[in-house]
Image (cartoon, rainbow, N blue to C red; front, top):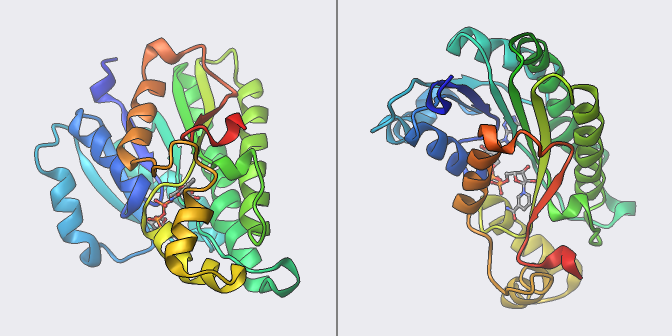
Length: 261
Ligand code: NAD
C-alpha cells in the first residue's frame, strides 16, 4: 500500500502539536481523523483549512478522553469513519502545575485519564486490525518529561514516564507482527499547553513571566529555542514509512539537547 492511502487517527488534534501532525498527514494524502472534545461546529474553520488541498479523506471525531466510555469508543469510531486504522498517534495530553501536597485530586485523575488511559484504550482497540493486516504504526507523544522530571508536575511526569513504559511493553508484544510502537519525547514546544502554564509557573516558582520563559522553558533546552510542532509532525511521517520498520520500542527525543545532559 502507498503511504498516502493509509488511514491515521491523531488524538487531540485541534491545537498545537496534534494539529501540526494531522495537517502534515493530510497534506501528504493520508486519510486523517482529527479529534478533540470540542463540538464539530466549533472547529469547522480549522477542519476546512486541514481539508484544503488534502487528497485523502479528512474526518472529525468528538470524544472527551476524561470519560472512559467516550475514550474507549474513539478508535472504533475512527475505524467506522475511515474504514480501517493503520496509524494511531496518541497525542492528547494535559498539564497542571502545583506542589504535590496541594495537587487537586480531580486534576490528578483527569491527567491520568487524558494522557495515559486514553492511549491504553486506543491501543487496545487499534492493534487487532493492524496485526491482522500485518502492518501498523503506533506513535505516542510522550515528552522529555517521560525521561526526566521537573518539580510541581507530578501527574504529568508520572503519566509521561508511564507512556514510555507502555510504548516499550506493547512494542515487544507485537514486534513480529509488522507493527511498530514508539514514543516521541519533545522538549518545550510553544503551544497553547505551554502558554497556559506561564502564569502558574510564575506563581509556584516566584518568578516573573519573562523569567519563566527564559529559565523554566528554555533553561533546560541547550539550543535555547522552542521546538516547532512541524518538526514533530515530520518525525511522525518518518516513523510511518516502511524504512522505519526497525524502529520500535524507542523513546525518541526531539528536545534541543535537554536529555543529553
Ligand atoms: P495543546 O493544549 O495545544 O493541545 C491539546 C489537544 O488535546 C487539543 O486538541 C485538545 O482539544 C485536546 N484535549 C485536551 N483535553 C482533552 C480531553 N479531555 N478530551 C479530548 N481531547 C482533549 O497541547 P500541545 O502542547 O500541542 O500538546 C500535545 C501533546 O504533546 C501532549 O500530550 C503534551 O503533553 C505533549 N507535549 C507537549 C510539549 C509542549 O511543550 N507543548 C512538550 C512535550 C510533550
